[in-house]
Each structure stands twice: as structure tokens, then as C-alpha cells.
Amino acid sequence: MIFIADSAKAKIEELKASSQVTNDHFIRVSVVSGGCSGLSYKMDFDDEGRENDQVFEDKGIKIVTDLKSFLYLFNSTLEFSGGLEGKGFHFVNPNATRECGCGESFAV
Image: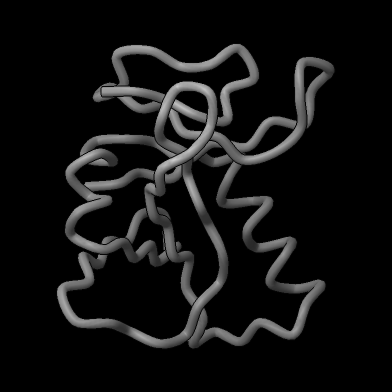
């Protein structure tokens, strides 16, 4: 399962309302090579399913990821912070053994 914090849900709903994203769109999350710790998160709106997609829904938000990325994201929570220490989406990932200082990449 991939979870959505209330802060992330509110921001996703705000982004959907202010863009041309329809109710058919969902959040696609993937893990890609890159960043100073080796792996980075990639997230965007999408409306097309793919073979081997893993589909989750939490708090009314649909999240889709590929099977390989799900192995890294299992039991993670998507959060949103608008505070002084940074603004944006980030994952609280129990599978990460280390994260870079800026929180943009991680290692397992």
C-alpha cells in the first residue's frame, strides 16, 4: 500500500482544481535512478494505465505505480509541506536506508 497524508490530499485536490486535470486522472509515482543518494521519486498526473500497474487508493486519491517502483515504495506515505524548511511533496519511506540532505533522493 502507498498512503496519502491529509496535507498531500489537500494539495493534490487544489492542483486538480486549478489545472485541466479531469477526474479520470490519477497520481503516477515511480522511482528512477538519480540524485546524490542513487534513487529519486518521480510524480505526475496521468490518465492511462499500463501493464503491471499497481493501483492504490487512500483518502479518495488514486495512486498508480509500476511493479518495480512499488518494491521501493511499499508502505510509504506521500506528504506535502509548505513550511520554511522546504515546500513540496515528499515521501516518508520506511524502506529507505538513507536520504540526501535535500530529501530529493534516497538509497535502500
